[in-house]
Length: 220
Image 1 (tube, helix red, strand yellow):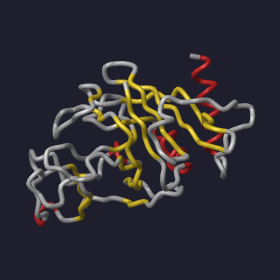
Image 2: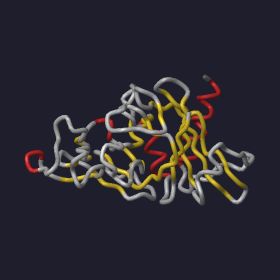
Image 3: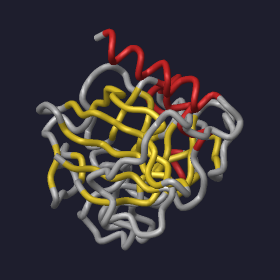
Image 4: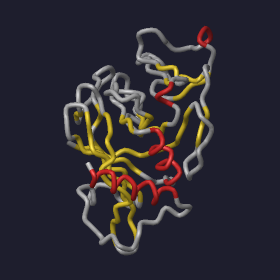
């Protein structure tokens, strides 16, 4: 536990700086995802450690190689674990390499390099498999939304778990039924419906560190 607290403290400090550059004491390492992330220079690694829990490590590629910005961040994943192939309602976190396209949340933009949308009661994530806007954020009043809401997988985004969140590029082709609404978001302390959730204060620091081109790598 003491080692975990020390490592979390190091991440806290690194991500709290303007440049968020890892300290020179870290030797370059070869992380497990190195051959899967292309030219990405920022990677969030999520590796399952339990039935619905994971360990998150944050990495940055420098001229000296891959450097750990921070390690050992506790994360919650889907209540049914992880899987390579997922579907709407599977309650599983998808495995693979995914883009981190933009941030959103009920709270104001905390800063950082990603676009940000502050959401309110009229913001939804369309989970209706019969909708032409399936797996996208939409803005409409409940009674005027052109897609299904109750029982369709559609989510209203004004909830505490979305105080801060980052959209994961899962099912970007928007194949009906192949899964929707996968985010890195604030935790409520329990398993998710397929997202990845961490402490809100830590998530804010990560969002401030992220830049376009960052990816999240998820594996067992």
